[in-house]
Image 1 (cartoon, helix red, strand yellow):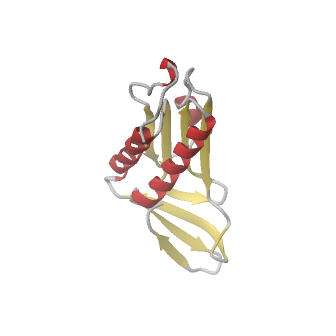
Image 2: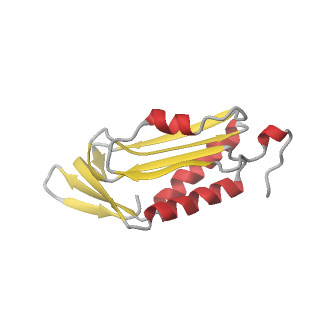
Length: 153
């Protein structure tokens, strides 16, 4: 169902995809939050994925992310699908690659919409679809010396 706009300020921004990146450098919450700032928004939802110290009952020491060369293009495709479904004013998503430690930021996504419910729903779709569709792989290293590759985010 197409979004219904009650006010001209609710209409989608000309190019609501403000920031998409895959980086080997640390991520910034401030950068992502600033990228989705818009005077016509009443709600901004932000999701931060961090490296946790466990997975599947095993202690995680560290991990590394790698990606396919098409990852940013796939990220854009996912972002544009979110924009087509919700009245998104601004959207941003950044993901790390390289070696990360427990507590490091792995992914930060944010969406601003006229209303909070739309922002929450759009942000949830953005992170879920990025996780399932963008070719980013996680290589986990466990405390017991074992390791594991996990596909797509």
